[in-house]
Image 1 (spheres, helix red, strand yellow):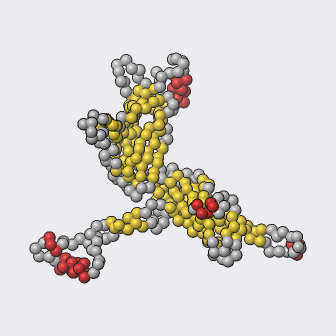
Image 2 (cartoon, helix red, strand yellow):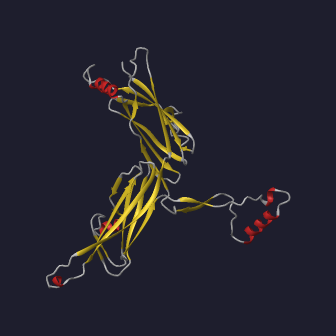
Image 3 (cartoon, helix red, strand yellow):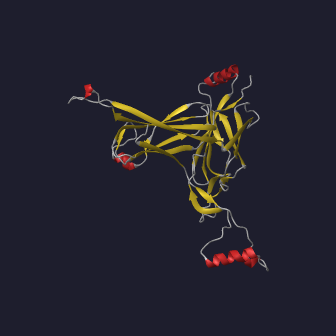
Length: 347
């Protein structure tokens, strides 16, 4: 059947810079005997306002032609627009959105109003609404990508129309029933891994009499797999039994202190001057983890937790890594790893 409503969906993302095919020709002034191609291009530039492209990237921003690829740790956002192409108002309009991940998990999304003007008009984005003829409603849906592989976005639009009246419904006090119609569209996109995270745990004895296993060094290697990114922060969130010391900073003279002769100090990150993690580059971080002081003496819960870990054949949890970055166009990414563990050997 022909529906009075139409559905359009567009991914909300940062634009990218448009590419072009540069023309590589020696400038006329750089060679004693310029070629015919150099002379022709020089004449074209002088006769018109045309600029011969010599660089593969332009200063024009373009939107992605389709959903494309989104990286794990980023937020997938999409604008859903339902238009009423007819003249009559359509009642009972409702938008339902869900995403099926690569593992088969179906996540239902909550559509939100796209503009503040919709909220001022009483449209809160939930429940059924009425769309007047020639008008439209817009919703924004968002989902944090946590899995690698194909994802399927399903948008379902339902609305109600009056049922055809029967002989019993022609009375003055009759209330004709509503018939519900619906249609849907399916969109596919892929989630890819942008970062490779490798960890290594080493036992550390700060002094000769220190107990083995009370202190460990955590090594973390971060590698960019797809594109360059601006690393904003990398934090280690320790488990309850551990406390952490960040070994990735150093003390240096303050760059803003010009009157004290460089006596004021400030902490800086070891990669602060680099900022951009280029594709294929690897940065290494280190953290010192120490067991918190026992509460209640030697017979505490911590010993029991270690014993349970040994009997169950699993490791002792250390904590999680939280990585925050931005793409070259400013799109935000955040990745929180699963719990890092350390194998506990029987004593």
